[in-house]
Length: 105
Length: 477
Image (cartoon, rainbow over all chains, first blue to last red; front, side, top):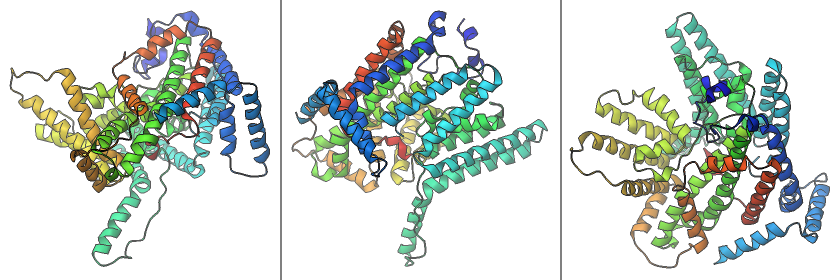
């Protein structure tokens, strides 16, 4: 039954050899997988932009210094500070404090 | 570009969008443009790392494509001798490429040492060949392609398809080594992605990120690196815990990369094979190699142990030599160092011992309990990792001497680090299909909900990893 849905299995990686092979997925969810994944990637990206300004600031700080890079670093740091004031960095900062305490024990 | 970083996140979103847009274009046109897009994206991914190495990758793809065509043409005209000649040329070319970049420095150093010993200190010039990231992986892919074409296991590919196979960014720098017969047919079909499959991909990416950014990175920075860099100033207990720590670190580091690679390829509609299968629960070394770096061990088994050395369908002593030879060469694949050779020889010797014991074990003797087999196998593997981790043979010996000395003293291992070692071991003994079970549940929720859950996990990881993360171990191979 599965092989009819998956013609590539006839001459590709045998079914079941990949950790993402899930037998018996209903046709309805097979048809909507791409849209569902868009929702997933979109929501996670927006959440990360809002709540993970640390990543942006770290990335900007690691850029090689130049006149072109300077405004990017300034903007990233400004957003990081603003996000901190708005309380958007709470999750990362709280976990970072926990991690620090755990490592010191 | 590293997987769990902001630039890669942005890069992947763009590739995902383009991949989906081109997958909607029906017919051969859509497939062509999708392959071209993936190729350009892969070169960009690699080029941001090492721009010069992209030329090497293109050259290697071109060479393997051309030689495979010559092999196929010779076979078509029933000129097997000629096909064999082209095959040997292809293998020699790939090995020469690998040999130059990977082993030239080592052999130059050995030759210089010999020349100095003979009183000719300036006879051998110093070399400084820079190793391109991922060369061991894409060279093995190229070799398996030409051998498969010769053996009729895969059809000769178009240049575009072969170049995508060798350059595809999820597996380019640290595997898994994907067989041509597994990936090339997937390029010829429209990609498909179910919700539960996508959830499994997300889980693999998240779990890989946890293993790398939290477990492997902390073990490396706070335990393994300090202890291995100066074993003489640490207690025997520290050395023992760091050896266990390295066993967990290398598993969490390498399996994390391949988990992420499988998940990322899956989101683009490609199925990669499983590369790790709870290796430390193996009751024998033979079983360990069915579970550890499966794509490399099966490559070595098919192309070296069986293909070149004759496998197990020959006299027992020849089978044992084949096993030993395969493992020594497998060790050497990791790099030009006597320690890798010793690591391979240790594994080869134990595999030979297991094979001989299977042959001579008297009937009626009790069988080793499975749990005891697991404990013994894990400790043999952990012993091998000491040679693997130390850069010098003398360093490995000093480490082992330090462990055997049973010296007391304080320990560097905190409860947090011991907990990470326990967590790394515990994931070997959990349900084998945990990711798949969880993916089924997540696939029933709306995509945006799963996205927010995933983002929350990533925020927690970000908090744990702080400013730094140790580099992936397998990038050096």
